[in-house]
Image (spheres, helix red, strand yellow):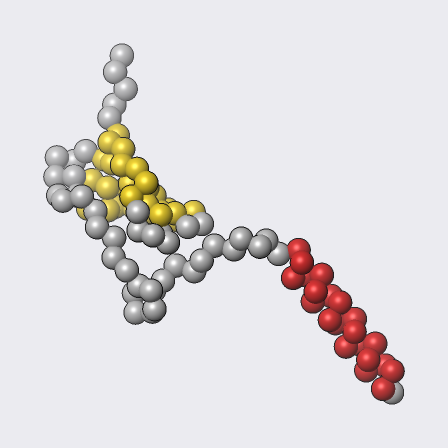
Length: 94
């Protein structure tokens, strides 16, 4: 009886270790909630407002619109809040 329990526990531990070993080591940090610890703010340029956002690991890509209706892409590092880039979207010239 004891041997059977040890075999089941040993097998379960082995499976758990194999699963943990297969997981990626550089898991992205959880995005902080508005009320949770580490919650922060993100300042966007004056006169602009965000109309959509896309998260990718530790970065966010925001689609912004200014007062003239021009669209901009803002890339932000979510862990530091650093602005990585701001691009204005313009029509291609012939």
